[in-house]
Length: 283
Image 1 (tube, rainbow, N blue to C red):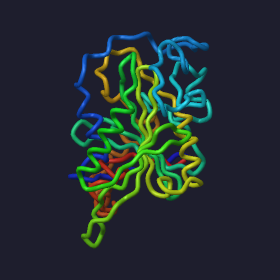
Image 2 (cartoon, rainbow, N blue to C red):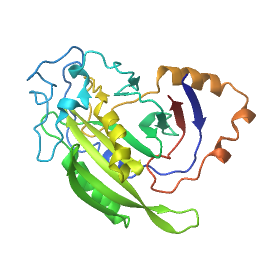
Image 3 (cartoon, rainbow, N blue to C red):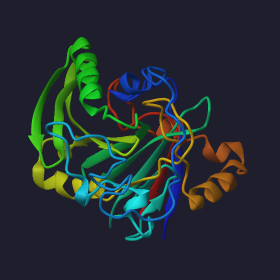
Image 4 (cartoon, rainbow, N blue to C red):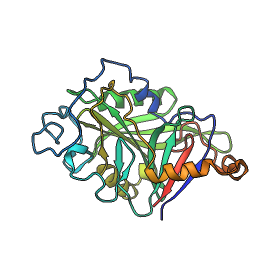
C-alpha cells in the first residue's frame, strides 16, 4: 500500500546548490522549441546516448548508456515501477520513502528526495542548451557558494562522472555550527541536466550509496518540446495518487492537521532534504 502524508514547515531556506542553479535560469537565450519526446531512438539518433541530439561529453562526464535516460531512449518510462513525477520518472525501490518538496507560495513541486535507511538522494532536472552541457559550470558555482558560506568543497571522479564532495555548515541542536557531508552529481542529457545530491550515510559510505546510485541511474527525464531558458527547472508534479490523497486531506477539519508543525523535526539552514511542505510516499 502507498501512504502519503503532509508536513508543513515555514520560513525555511532552499537546499544548498538550488539557488546557484535556479538563479541563473535567465542567463543566455531561450532554448528553441525542439522535437517532441515521443517514440524511441536508435543509436546515433537525436536524444540517444551519444547521439546527434546529445551535448558533447566533457572530460569526466558520465557514460549514460546505463542511465539516466531521456524518455526517447526507453520503451516504457513506467517499467520497473517508476513513479510519474512529470519531468522525472523515478524508479521505485523496496523500502524507499519518497519526499516531494513543494514551494509554499506557488504550491509547485520543487524537487524530490528518495530516502533509504539513513541515506537520501535529492534530484532535480533542468533545461540545458542543445549544443553543450552545463554540469561543469554548475559544479563550479555550487562550490563557490558553499565555500562562501564557510564550507568545504572538492571534486573527485567516480562512475557517476565528476562529483563535488562538500561539507556544508549546519546549525546543530545546541546552537553551535557543524558541517554536513553531501555529494553533488550531475548528468548532461539531450537538452536537459539532471542533478543529484546525496546526503546522510550515502554521502560518505559507498555501500550505503549503492542502491541510491542505482536509483539515480534508473531515472527517466521527460524534457518535453516546450521552449525553456537554459537551467530553467523542468516542471514536476505530484504522483496521481498523491494528488487524490492531498485533495482529501485538504478537506479534513483544520484541527486534525494542526500537529504537523509541532511534529516536524527542526531544519538546519543548509540541510538539503528538509525544506518546505512535503508529500511523503512510503513504498
